[in-house]
Length: 379
Image 1 (cartoon, rainbow, N blue to C red):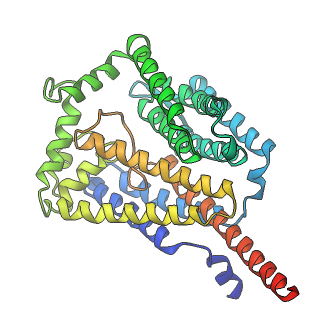
Image 2: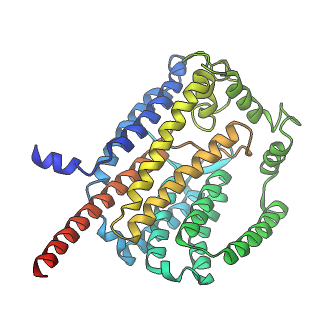
Image 3: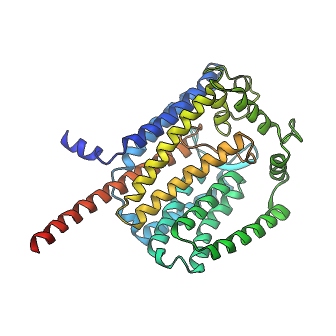
């Protein structure tokens, strides 16, 4: 019992319970379709249980090995190989080749790739945080992120590519980029955006962006999803229509209600009050994650905590933005809430690793306290 208490002492229960609560709210939102033959609810229960097991397993190591360059380099190369293999062995679903079909379940490697990118960038900037003023470190780190971003974009997964780019930009900013270099990045980004629009983006991707600018121009075509989503969010009003009574999702007007538009489905059933509760839970997750990052035992732990905070925030902003009509529809999940195992396991694994790093920080702090006491006695 004492050993169990010692093991659980480094777990941030407020953070974990908030993440579980968000997952349960998503689960309840999927419930109305359980009787129609769709097994989203039943499968998601399994994914939540597996994710919690992964969380506790991931919180055990102290992750000293993640400071070693060969380990991090191996993880990065492995991600590139897996993302490349998806073009050969991946299954095509709705025109996108994003996952491996493994029979009982499917694996979407772009989700764990985000976590490994955070580890790579945290390792890179932890050793060079003093030299971040040199532009070459920004370009080198951009190459690390750019290769992953390109492979995800070509699947094609525009939403995933945006999240990966956001993780890199966010970590560069917290690492201490200068305003001059930020301006260079902004100009480079505009040039790349122009090139993407002219030579890379597919017609349907351009249509989504144009629909964002003129949302009511084609509500029966490219603007259908965005229009139905905003209708669902607005129809929830203050108290919502009640669990299981969301007409936009229940009558199938709202597509992909369990993944890309689960926030809209939730807002329709729970209303403004339910959305406020959900926002409070996400706020707890973000604040507690940042608090653990601020107490990191070294630069790597701090940067890793900031990295997963940026990942959660980017997912949240993009998902909610496209659900309420403020951003183009890109097909992005919302952390802990959307249906799916790959992203859910990745998110809980990220929290578990953060807990492991936090446990090491406490150990370092205790050692420093003892050193101070010894020094005081010698004086």
